[in-house]
Length: 132
Picture (spheres, rainbow, N blue to C red):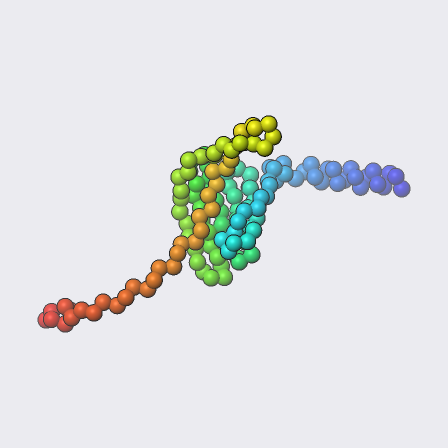
């Protein structure tokens, strides 16, 4: 019986060691979602982050340095999509709660969806009627 348990644990340890070690370093944090709730932000291996929320919005944020970030968002239920880039001032220091130590912040910016513009009013003109 004990040898069976040991064999199962050895197989489990071998299976975990065969996984890509970069996948172990991924983390998740909570951010304020575009609809006002809370959404997960997956910190991927490298400079990328994946955003998902309950409304169906999906986004990828790429932050290769401390002062630049590009983003691409899409909501498949509404069809709305937006992308762009922002320049930030980099991580800001904040006063820590323990012994007043400075803590490094994050330069990540979550840009919201673009505002819906009002429809353009129709133009009343008779200029084209006068051209022969």
